[in-house]
Length: 274
Image (tube, rainbow, N blue to C red):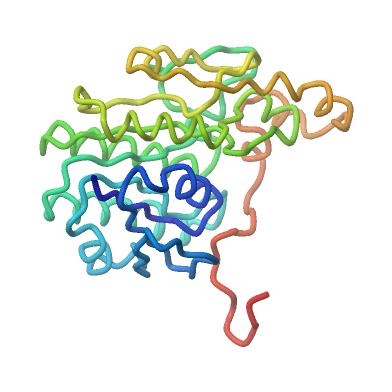
């Protein structure tokens, strides 16, 4: 059974993925935060990936890495730089030094967020990031390409939509990525023999999708879910209005936001965790 490292394992996506992959792989899970629940089949290792020594320590003895760790929303440059750019480089380079050949990099729909909603795009489009966060994901894709072609590693980049069981608003009807479809695509990224440098979209089979995801389908991806089953209930509660730039572009609020509170932030000193 392969051993898979999941960084950022305490986050929402990491939590879904750990549940879906339980029993299929030996899971080594890591985060700067504590995990609310650690399954007996998992090994938790606390790490700060902005420190190369930590990245080197957690990437030892694994067969593949799902690198979810980082600043997951738009934020100040210092936070994005430390977690998503320095942290990403540290994980990739530590993996190379430790002989780990395969990395799954969950990039983001925000790497292409300034494409309009009336456009259908595929994996070959030029990046149009909608935020500093989106820029950091474009950096990760470029770094993955470097490590694939310079060092012979196998790099699988998934431009993740919104991982959830159901869509929560109109925009997410186009980018829903259910946990079971996430697990299927991740499994392809871990197991498929013909990966060198590949970009796919991490979305379910949504009728309203903005993506031509044929690059994932050619690898055998067969998403089981479609957000359209929830469309009526989502649209009836959708409030009219909103920022015109956000409403026009695929990235939504990220196209206009300057900073969103970091859901992965540690509690400030002097404050108790709730």
